[in-house]
Length: 396
Image (cartoon, rainbow, N blue to C red; front, side, top):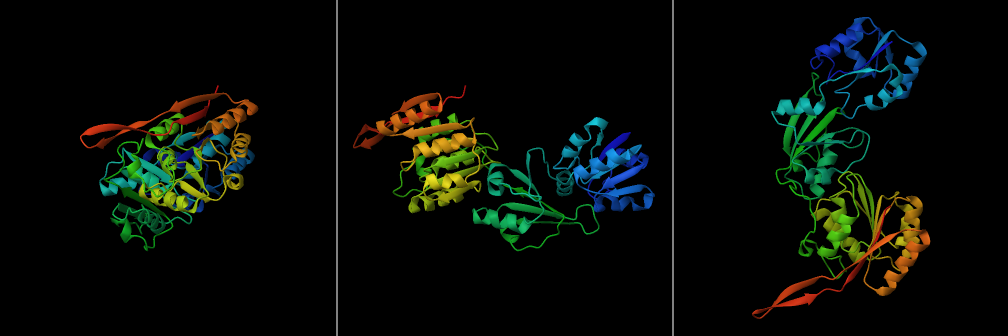
C-alpha cells in the first residue's frame, strides 16, 4: 500500500507542483475535503470526501487501497491536518509531498521577503495578535472562524497600532482572488471572504526583548510597584517559555505581568489584583506595551485562583494574607511549577519558608537591597530602597 499526503497549493490547479500532480495521477483513491477534491472531479478516480484525520485513517485501514492520495490545502507543513494524520498512518510510512503555502504565495504576489516572518494561526482558534505584531517586523495570520481581518485590525487599533500596514489576501489562487492593502485603521469594517489570510508589517517592532523596563516607563498611580532591579531578577529567574501560562498574583501596576508577557508571546499571563485603581493601571500598561496576552482578574486571589488555567510559572508579589492557599493551589495543579515569592517583611519570609518546607519544596532565598542616587545641590547622594527577599523554588 502506498499513501501520499499531498499539499495541493492554493487551488489544486495553478499552484499544483509537478510532483504533486504525479502522485495524484498514480493514486487509485483521492481523499480530502470537498474543496480539495473539486479540481480533480473529472479524473474519474474513486474519491472519499473527508477532512477529519481519524476518519481518513479509519477509511484507509478498512479499505486497504493499493495507493491513495490525501489532499491538503497549501503545504502539509503549514498549520495542516497532515501532522495528526502522519501519526495515525505511521504504519504505512506515508510520503509527504510539499505544496505552495498561503504565506509563500501572498508574499510572492507582494514582492516581499518572508524569511523573518512570524506565523500565527487564527483558523478556529485564539492567539495573541497584538503581542506578535509588536514583537515582529512581519506577522502572517491564517484567518478563519470568528476572527476576520476586520477583527484583527480592531484589536490592533484598540492597542494604538492604527498605522500598522496590513495586506489581506482573499480566495488566493482562485478566480475571485483579491489582495488589498492599507493601514489597520482602514480595515476595521472591511468584509472579507472566509478564505482569507493577512500580513501585518510593523516597521517599529521591538528589536530587543523588553527587560528591566525603567520604572518611569510604566503608567503609575499610588499603587506599589515591583521596582526595575528586583523585577529583572524575578522574571529572569522564572524561566518563562514562549508559550508559558503565567500567574502574577498581586499584580499592582502590572509591571511584572508586562515583562512576563513579552517573554511568553504565545502564552498568557493571568494578572490578579483586588485594588480597583491597580486594575485600571494594569489595563493601561497592558495597552501601552501591546500585551493582549495579559488577562486581568479583579478580586481576591484566594477566590480567583480557582478560575485560572493550570500554570507553568507563578509569581506572588502580594497575597492579601492568603499566601498558603495560593501556593498550595498552584502546586496542586502543577507539581513542576516554577514559583517565586517576594517579601518585604521578616514575617512574610518566615511564612513562605514554612510553606515551602511543609510542601517539601527546596528554596533559594536572596535579599536584594537597591541603592539609587539623587542630586542634592552640587552633590550626588545615595537613596536606599527597602530590601526585598526573593524566595524562589529550587527545581531539582
